[in-house]
Each structure stands twice: as C-alpha cells, then as structure tokens.
Length: 397
Image 1 (spheres, rainbow, N blue to C red):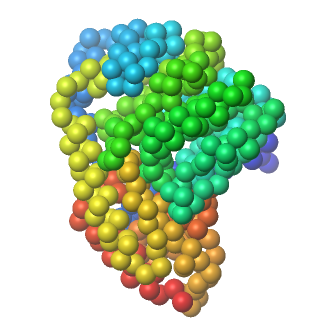
Image 2 (image 1 turned 30 degrees about the vertical axis):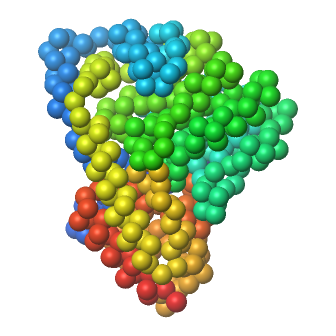
Image 3 (image 1 turned 45 degrees about the vertical axis):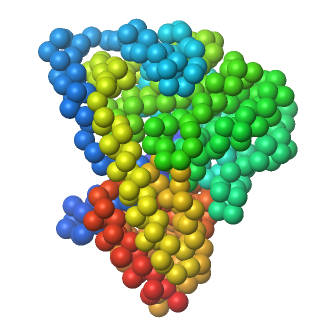
C-alpha cells in the first residue's frame, strides 16, 4: 500500500517531461519518432565552456561549494546583470541554483504562504502552476489568446490583484508562445505592481538572448519597482547547457538570503564543476550565442511558413525563444474513424501515435486548443515533421 503525501498526489507530472519520456520509450522500441517536445537546444555546449569544466576537474574543484555559489561566479553574474540588463546587484543578492526551475521554486517557497495568491499569465510554462501549489499558494490565471498575441493588459492585471496577492510571475520571451512584451508594455505592467505594496514580481528571463525582434527589457531595470522584482535566469538555453543545471537569481538581499537558507537545507549548493563551466560561459567571448540565435531564427521562419499552409491551423509568429504555439482547435472533436480527439493533449498523443511526431498539448500550459512545438531541431527534421503532421490531420473528419 502506498502512503504518498497529499502534495505529491495533487501534483501533476510535467507534461514536457512526460512526452519526452514517452518519445524516448518509443524510439528505444525501434519507432521513428521526431521529437519537437522538449525545450532544449540541439546544439552542443561550446568548446570553451567544456574546456573550463575539464580544467576545473584537473584543478580539484571537488569540495562543497558555497550554498549560493562561488564568489567569482556570483560576481560574474553581477557583471552580466549590469552590462546586459542595466541592473545593479551585489553578490549578496545573487543565488546560484540547480537550473532555472530550482531557482523559481526557491523563490516561491521563500515568499508564498499557504493561501497566498500568485498571478500567472497564460499560456504559462508548465511548472509555474504546480510549484505554486507545492507552496500552498493559489494560482490565479490571467487568460490570453492568439487574437491579442498572448499578452495581458495592465487593466487585466489590475483587476486580478487582491489583498491576498503575493506574487506575479512574468516571462518574456515566453515559453510556450515565444511572444515578447515591448518596453512600454512592460512598464505599464510594472506601474500596476508599483501601486500595490506587498506584491512582488518574478521575471523569468531565461530566453533573453534568443530574441528575433525588438529588445529584451529586464523588469528590475524599472527603478521604481527594483526592490520588488526577482530576476530569474540560467545558462541552459543561451549556451546550450541544459544538462549542466545552472540557474540563478538576482533579488532583494532578504529574498536572496531566504533562498540561500532554503537551498542550504535542500541541496547544499550546485555542482562545483558546472559552476566553473557557467563562469566560463558568462565571461566567454566567442560567437556561439549569435550563431545559435541565427539558426533558431531561420528555423522559426521555416516552421511557421509550413504550419501556416495546413488547413485550419492558425499561427502567430513568435518573436523569441524556440517555440511556436499554433491554434489547433479546428481539429478538436474530430475522429479518425476509430478514435475521437477531444483535447489538445489528446491531439498531441494522437500525433505521436499516428505521425511519429512528439509535441506537447496546450492544456498543461493553460492553453486548451493549442499545441506547443519546439523548433530546436534540424531544418530537415522540421520539414519532415510538419509533413507528417499535415498528412495525419487530413485523416481527422
């Protein structure tokens, strides 16, 4: 008999991780699967970063690191924030964690009490919702759609804030939509936050350098809410370092101290070798970042053009990240003669079975009627994947 905790029973399995696991199982069984489900660059970690990790091993970086991260890494993060984002943080305001996901749960657990409300902008990254539930908070979802470019309005945010609101989670460029808020749009949101004392904003900026149009603006760069913003970032996407598991925050010192305290009980700190690699990444000067961005831009243009040719699918061109979130509601409620496709999650599973293409249903992102497609894959495989999707959808009547 299982005696699982209520929090585990209530927690959903990550939809992206579940689809990736199912895809791997099918591949290992000999099936031809094209995976467009995981948010992971298909590039290798740049050579200069790998060399730094090897050097760290040879230099015996094998002891417990400081809980918040090595001082020189935190100093490098402070330089990055100043030079790239126009934000001044000291090393005591920076905490290095085991990936952006770890950084986010640290923040939520540090400032959200049971019963507190956390505003999440939909479509949202899958883990925000369940991480709020883990802390005992109540997710408050602000809906958007393809018609308004998946963006909330300041009035929408204002109307959602109550005396119980503790945190607003903001993400631009967005996972899963790839949409980017303009400077003026972000400032308008920041003004709303500023009017409500005791409400904080966590700005997830992991995709800041995978940007095709406009500019990236850090929420903490608006000085009137600097002391109520937690900036979350990572080396995972920018430097193709997903497996290295290095994320970090810049925050008011009391929040950083709380995250350090929490992390000290959970993980004691982050891999010493991965930290040395992250330091090299942040201080590095090669052109790998730009080359990856250019490849993602080419792939974005390719896949959006191909998807737009499929009858019944609507697409908004993403401005950043490496995802597209097409509206596939035209195909819901249809059948292939034996199976009725009722939901976006159901369609994603049906496409995996029928077309051998792994996507992720939008239900887990707070986007029923959509599927998320990652175009972090080769041009040839993207072309083949969309061909298979198109042929499969033609079966649904």
